[in-house]
Amino acid sequence: MEDTACTNRPAAALAGLRMKSSTEQTASRLRAASALARAMPAALALWTIISSGTLASGVAQQHDGAWIAIATAAALLLAALASSIAGFAFSAIAGCALAYLGIEPIHAVQTMVLCSIATQSYAVWKMRESIDGRSLWPMVIAGAVTIPFGVWLLVHVDAPVYAAGLGAFLTAYACYLVLRRKEYVVRGNAWRDALAGALGGIAGGLAGLPGAFVTIWCSIRGWDKLRQRAVYQPYILAMQLVTIACLRWQSPIHDSIAEDLAFVPFALVGAVGGLAVFQRLSQKQFQWAVSLLLAVSGVGLLARVL
Image (cartoon, rainbow, N blue to C red; front, side):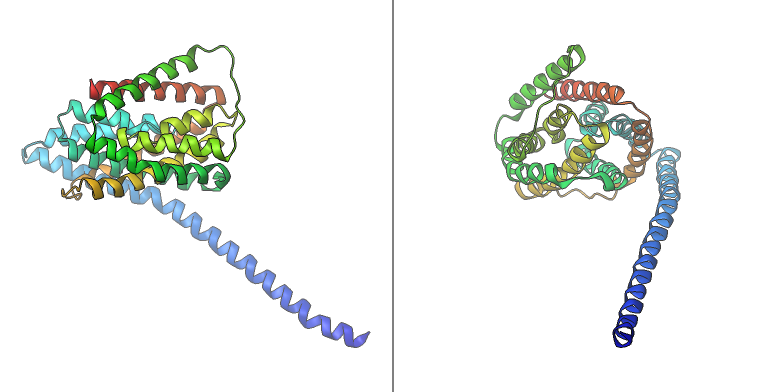
C-alpha cells in the first residue's frame, strides 16, 4: 500500500503541474485577447485620423478629385453602417453610390472589395465563437466550385441580362418577406446547404452578391439572428476571397491599391457602428432589416444594369 501511494504521488504532482500550466496558458490567451480588443479601437481611430488628414490635405491643395475622394469615403462609411446591421449588401449599396459619383469601374470594384473584406473580417472576428462549421462548410465548398462559372459569365457573356434577372428576383422576394402573414421554417441538410452555397457562388461571381441566396436560406431555417450571421457572414468573406482570385486570373487588374486602402478605415468605422446596432435588434427587427437590405440589393443591381 505504501509503495502504491508513493508511486501515485509523482503522477498526481505531474497532473497538478499540467493543470496549472493549462490554466496559466488559458489566462495568458485571455489577457492577450483583451489587450488586442483594447488596442484595436485606438488603432482604427489613428488610421481614420491619418486617412482624414490625407483627404483634407488634397482639398487644401486643390488636387483634382479631392472632393470626390471625400464623398467616396462618406459613401463607403454609410454603406458599411447600413449593411453591417444585417451583415450583407455592402457592394449593392456602395456600388450605386460610387457609380453615381462617376468612379472608374475598376477602381470602384477594387475599392469595394478591399473595404468589404475588411468589414466582413471584423464581423467574423467579433462573432467567431458562434460560428458552426456543420452548415457553413458545405456552402463554402459548393460556392468555391461555382464562383469560377459566375466570373466566366461576367467576363464572357451578356452579364447585365442575368444580373437584371437576379435583381428582379431579390426585389420580389424582399417584398414577399415584408407582406407575408406567416413565417415558414424549412428543415435543412448538407445537400440543401450546398445548393444555397452553389447559387451564392454564381451570384457572387456574376454580380458581386455572394450572400443573397445564403442569407435567404438562413432566414427560412428558423435560426436566431446570431446563428444566421455566424453562417452567412464567414461564407461571404470566403466567397469574396475566391472571387478576387478568379477575377485576377480571368481579367487581371493592374491598378495600385495604395490609394484605395485610404478608404478602408472609414468602412471599418461604419462596420463598428452597424454591428453595435445589430446587437440591439430584436429577432423581428433583424428580419425586417434583412428584408430591407435584400430589396436594396435587388434595386441597386437593377439600377446598375438597366
